[in-house]
Image (tube, rainbow over all chains, first blue to last red; front, side, top):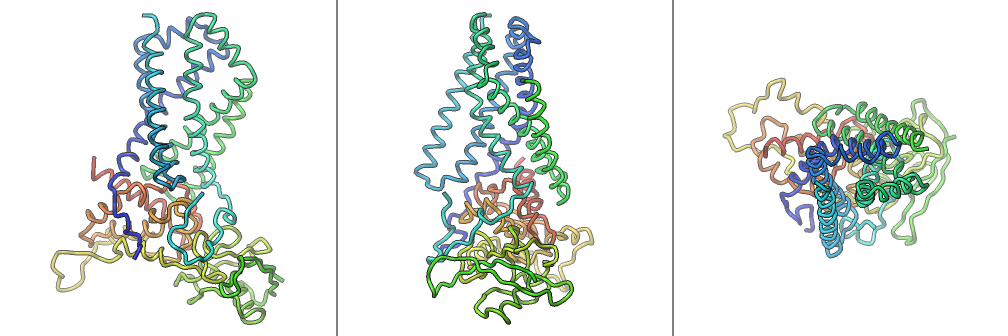
Length: 120
Length: 130
Length: 233
């Protein structure tokens, strides 16, 4: 009998689900700030120096680092969920998730280097 | 795209997405997913903007010019709208996960609020950017 | 007259499924969709095949897709429906004939959650008693008649039904998790903690919209997730 029990239980969904929500809260708090800052610069309300004062300080860098860790984790878990939903061939799904992980980690390293390389 | 859930003895699969009526909570969930993908794609764009804005004064001016160009504005508008919707509906999802607004009517009402916030956000942001 | 467009499939005739139009008179007040289907079968075309039994929304046999949303034909008023009424079998299921689908997999999934009371403590002399509050935990759960309207409305189950248990089965799983008399709650939770069995639910809420008994499987699934989290944190 093929049955619903064919695959058993993998004991793996809870961690992803929980971390997804935890990181969601961090992103929900910090991402709007980043976007509002971007709009303020766009609008001319802040010039480059005023903007750098905000993001270049120690607190700005820390918040930015927190944001990028939470955001990239959240994005990884979210896109992973979507890939799992629609890509049914494991031989395709697993490389896709690997590529996603490497790609997002790459962005994370680039992002970190941008934030922390600003002239001290 | 989808695979059949089990050998179906060459029986046809009854129509699903082709017949199912779109309902607001379903749209809200799908939109959460769509906006999530848009925001994930925004990550490299955000880095591109960040490097420009925090670079030399020349870089800053070039980046500002790009942001004010038509594709720049469109990208800011699209990702901003996605962010507003994903934020509001994300809060909704977490509240539902926590067991709040779990009655059927509140699930429908909160879906309306999410989609409404997304539309309102799109309009306000559009007004701000143009 | 009421116009209907019904999904037809005859395995013996071969060929693709198609839609057939019928016109049925309104022959009684408060007429239900099942009355119209019966009229077609008895007066117009005896080959139309569908399941029905009690005719009053208790047995759960005549679940079908009515104008795009799943429901029970026997408790759906034709008066409120947009015409032509498009009637299809429950979505995402192998069709046996016309509106009759193969529910084998659905009930296998149901069996997999062991939908019965499991207790290890000795059988008491009389019943296993519950307080009023403990019994109230089962409200919104015990009413489920397993018609399959919710599970077959769920896109997550359409794409991943081989592994995702679907709203009806998860609501039933929650029914036993909540039952104060059941003593295998831990084992039940163990078997559900799976990215595909349980966490494919993305709060699409089609199940809640479809349930003809007014239940809320999304809420039940969220309760299972919270219980799992509370157990591990």
